[in-house]
Length: 370
Image (cartoon, rainbow, N blue to C red; front, side, top):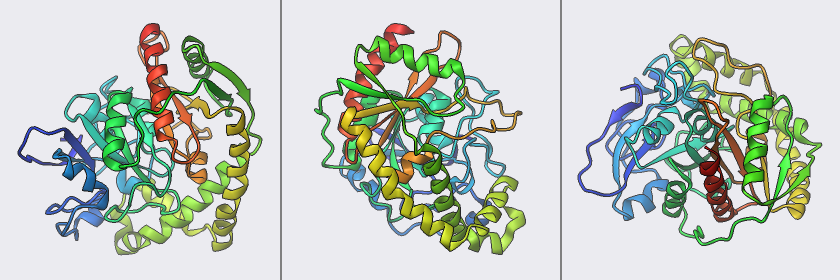
């Protein structure tokens, strides 16, 4: 049951959908993978708004998927509800925080899953489990009825085994989504810090195999955007979840408790400065998009770590995208070894169709390399 916090048995033969258990489903409690929250959670009176399009299409919800507690972690390890088993290797972390969502689609228990992404929580488990995940443009998918982590960065998006599945999910979340968008002919290759050479080499081979024009680009503001985003996130995490900490700090997982305490120390001024830096960072990315409509860099800078190893002490590659608010697509890349890595495609606001079309092209190239 570690993939699921609650299994559902809705009737019908529609698309099978897993819902991360911080998204309200009418008649069921929302736990966010947290015992302190679950102890007082009443059944939701109505579905979260992001489910409206799915319900209209007659999907079948098959369960509330497990997650890293309070969506506040990148490994997917949950001390309260168990840890979803990585289908590529049970010794590896499944990635977080949308761990159960990634595992559900990777194992075929769901056709589509909904996850949330604040600092990479859709893209990281997709990278760890060899699946595909799309972080939409911030504000595009409504968040009413979704337990927040950091409202300035949070999004809900689709996860599936392939790009076509993610595109199908995006069409259910956003009626303006354009599945017929053409792919990018030019991709900007961005070099981010501290990437394992195996990961970088695999991404480079895939881009070469896709026969697109690749332009090398630099983002000098990367480190500043990374740090600003963490200030925003941690300050808001404390504002959102301090009530749980104050109710029963000992009932929280040690890692989540430590992150909340870190957030308590982030000042209002640091938070405000982080939000103000968003405009600077978006301007830098806008200049990059003028040279290439899609940017590419690794989703994870390293291969998925083992459950018994501490997470690598390196800068994560996802949260700067959340600060900008732009969409990003993660898809697997073969390495020639037993584990894939993952490439992240980033585009301007509302470029989800462009990213999916480009992802299909890269997916075909990946199949030829495998």
